[in-house]
Image (cartoon, rainbow, N blue to C red):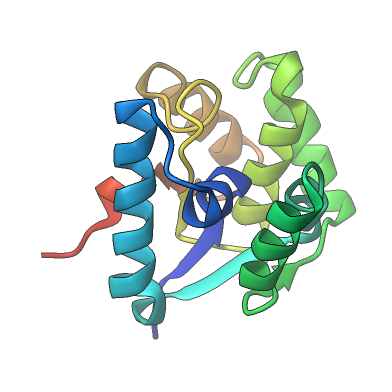
Length: 157
């Protein structure tokens, strides 16, 4: 059985965006495209209606490209269970109140037993200083936490 990977909005955005002039962002875009090309079929890729909503915003042509990529993924439901866990992540300070939607991404993945959450959001999600608190809240709620990582961290050797 292949591991499930929740694809968060930043990954789809980096995958489909024009190359950025910022060398760090351009590097992330290149890694994302390489990961997608090489590892797309090695995992069961999932996402959510929350990602669809976020990806559908902004420039209509760019949104169309993002939504086309998402159309190939299985979408997980935003359940009451996920909303409750997201609220717990925020209320305990594991995730900032300003990042409540990021907490919901986490909670959707966790409540669905997804192994990995793939993101370039290193401020609110793929952040080592927050990881222990996020994991503690998930376990206290009775769930095994998702492994939060960037595409670069999920390269198989």
